[in-house]
Length: 616
Image 1 (cartoon, rainbow, N blue to C red):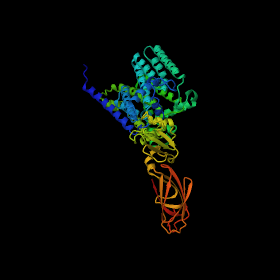
Image 2: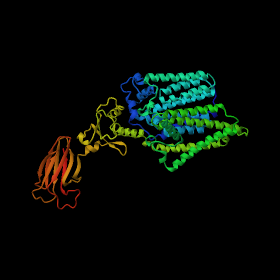
Image 3: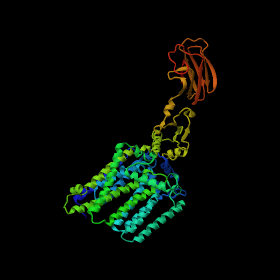
């Protein structure tokens, strides 16, 4: 039985503690995110499972995209969640933390620095590009595709390093899984061929295996989709929308994103670099300069301190760079660049930094070995001091920028809709005891353009047997009469991008003063008001005139178009209106007198009498 030394136990403990810290960072940095209601693609994806068997769900007869690997996971995932939608974000955070721990160990193995590996892993978690992975149900798909691409890179790196063909075949397997998780990662085929060519054995065979694998994947997609060309985003087709100018423009945007500079429309990134404050602009520029200085320092180390450039360095740098460029190209061929697609190239860039640092450190260690610098402290602060300082300056600047950019997530179109969906869930499902089976929901105006399909599927995500007429869109609350206990009425707060439950407000408000009638009862010579009748359909008027009557005072009362004249025979006069129960009654009042001693005039007409209204 192997004996583990105390020093090794201590090293393992440090890895465990840093892994726990990464989990803590993942939850803290994403503390403001939540999903309480489904929106857009999430809602559609959720709805496709209802009433469909497993095989038909994973291999649908008609589909624009073919992602069976993800759909297998989605079927299981949704089955576990049931209607506990609020668990999506915490689960996504845990997945992100697990990925970051994997990144930490991969980066540590290359950089030979626990501190740098932890910093790069933290940058991966804090990155503004993670918004979709964390904040959407479909974020699991993005996370899966990222994991498969990362494992593909890892095994290709091992294959180039040790020449074991099994590593290459593992990479092929993860490439296959990735292509059927998200089709944009099909562009990583050249990296398989590259690794096969620069590998130590079976070069031609492994290259042919790579090509054969791609052909097989393409044929499977052709059978499923009747097309070779992958679909673009937003219902577009790459074959119809692609042009070279837009491609290079998109590549430029992605490069700026990687440098910490937000470009393009703010509904895709939250805030443009031009609109950030001057201090942050300076921080980002310093970070860019530090990153370039680190690269220059690395080149200087090779040119000055090393006798030759090792071929393995070139191979691995090209491998990481190829993954960066490939994942950027896959995002640049469609109609727009969304930040979530930059997450993969950003991760590969972080790993490239780790590898370059490891090479630079090995060069410097070899150089100073002759000077007998043995202490680990000396190696950290003397052997690679310049590289460490430059990288941590860059990391600090990038983390600062990402935290700032995260503050503008609500401007991104996905979060605009998601916040609205959360508001709809809060004002209905969560407010009314998670039981809407006997409720009818009325939405006034529908300026948010919620479709009938989305409104029904939204509530079916909580209860798949919910009534089909659960939601009704209305122009005015007047069209629904008296509010009963089975009704929920929502208005839209356009300014705050949210729904408001106005059920109790409308239930308690019986009188709407259009003009000429005031809350204290005073009424002008002419007035108009809408009165909601009660269960008996009776509206009682008490008219008080605090002055001396001449005997010819009269009020013309028009109720829903029918006129009647009321003659005042005393200072307090009663009048009753019989109308349809629980309905809105339009009342128009016109008097031939006014109060001559009134000390004020509130409207265009003069004050005439006091009107008290009682509803039965």
